[in-house]
Image (cartoon, rainbow, N blue to C red; front, side):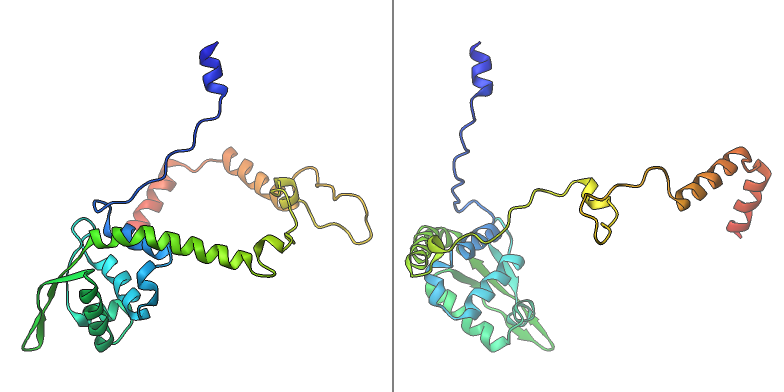
Length: 216
């Protein structure tokens, strides 16, 4: 009896997942973006775009990326000068550390070795979420905000297969449209062709000749 009570009782919701520095880099940056970026909200847009590009380039576990400024510019869709300014901004904020500076050797460049500080990203998440919640509360408290607006969306149940496949209703008919009974003319033709093919199967010599013609 106790087992039945346990089964019928609703299960408790799972606890929220807390991100730490062991989480993949792309997940940390995605969580920071979903939280409104926090302290990076007032930074230039190129800083956030460059950080999103690094999330796809860098190693997800270590946060290390071997990339040139030109490669990052191509990935982010920005100019090289803008990428340099964004990288300098992130270095000053302690979010990116340059372990090896790149250099140019002839026509080929040596990539820089950058490390995205995952602990610094984790430290930005709580304040980013609190700031996002505060902005949502301020928007809701304005005149004409979300609480005072009626829900104008008409509720409709999920369409069943009858409403999807039923023929269009005739003009002037008040009752529901009736589905046609029996196969259509095209379906009857296909059934007749299938019955004729089953009654006269191809011979083995015919199949061998067709395979030989294809192999040529």
